[in-house]
Length: 152
Picture 1 (spheres, rainbow, N blue to C red):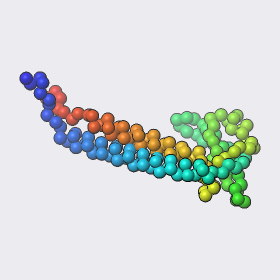
Picture 2: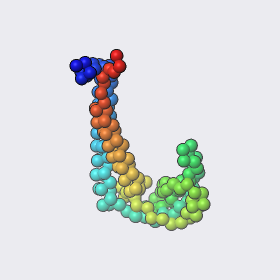
Picture 3: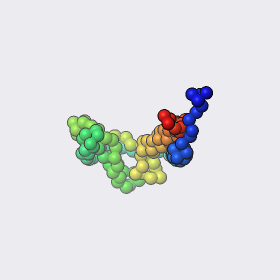
Picture 4: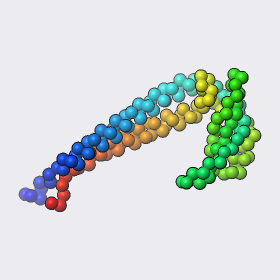
């Protein structure tokens, strides 16, 4: 009946496993909580958001080792008599970026903090929720791992 018996548990690996599970689950829960708070903030700002007309005024070339050259578009807009400049979009084509230069676009901003765009709040919320869910799933997956000695 030796074949049907489970091998002994490796205690050192089991401790590491539970520390990893605890870390991943706690990190996942904290990121999910941050995503939830950010989504509540998004919905409260969404009701008060203001759309302003902005002009694409600047292109900055950025080189990334993974994606190559990218072109970041910056817009200028005025809200309540104050001029603001903020990142608008990132394009991979220099031709498309140069075509946007001088064009008028609509930007939706937070009236309480005019430097903050509504799309930035939404993308932060999405990232928190995505990575929080992934960390939590990794923690649950690690709980299914076995720490038995094999082949001795």
